[in-house]
Image 1 (spheres, one colour):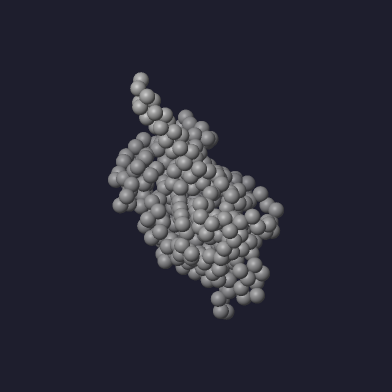
Image 2 (image 1 turned 90 degrees about the vertical axis):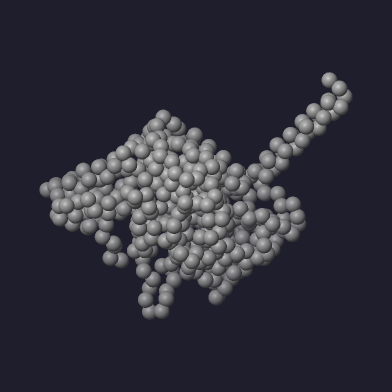
Length: 396
């Protein structure tokens, strides 16, 4: 081997090592801000919908049920408008539940920034810290980004999945006091909402096959079809997905850790730091992998930017927004199980009726769409009446 060739091979090896280190640095759990005055902003969140029989998102009451947030989080019910209090969250209907977007800030020095998210086709329902204005969007006004600050972050001493989002290296933030209210601190800006807008993916389950169709102009990085039947797990992955595909339901022979690894890899490849990806998965692990079928997909940032325009000043040197679509699929098995319990609602035994009601409502906020689909097919007026009673909005 000539000396020139040996030198060339050594140089190639050095380049390969440098590229590997660069990738590891990019994906490091600790953000490295290169310039003293640079600002890095990362965001993750979820759009949750329920697929109807035609694959299109159903309208439902996404906030119907017990809250899963700490007591210190602000909600629309905290606000009073004129002489009328706002309607209960549980009464709001929408096609999409925007769940737990969090905005992380990274900087090498303390700085003030302004942050606003617009939601023209939706409504903000929960948030923290304080915001100046909340409606079809949220404006926090001036936000102090304070690396290494020893803020006293709020807690309600519950084992709430909200706190998992703090497990990153993001700088603490503080909202400047307004309207006589004390300043509030957190490791991120948090908000949630509901809306009616077109998602780029439709999912239909028919005759044991899953049809996935994308209307996005650019490919979706990854689609994961997931199913859990009585603890038996399966999933299928579609990469760089566009157009339409018809595939079999997943074979139930996998482990949850396998699908978590797929999700984690995709979150990091999309630009999140490793700790951010872990925080997102830890936040939603109990919900994402519970009983049922659902499809996860990673929205192109152009779609996120159009649905949720984000304005931050000064402009970040790097802005990464990773929104995961989560489509719940109502399977024939679920409908069959609920229908069997509906027949027991007419039992003469109060214990049997109560047990049937609990089984029907075990799907939580997803129970209502299942019941609505049963109503569409039900011809017995007495049974229809019992179903209607189960989904009757709360009087409060």
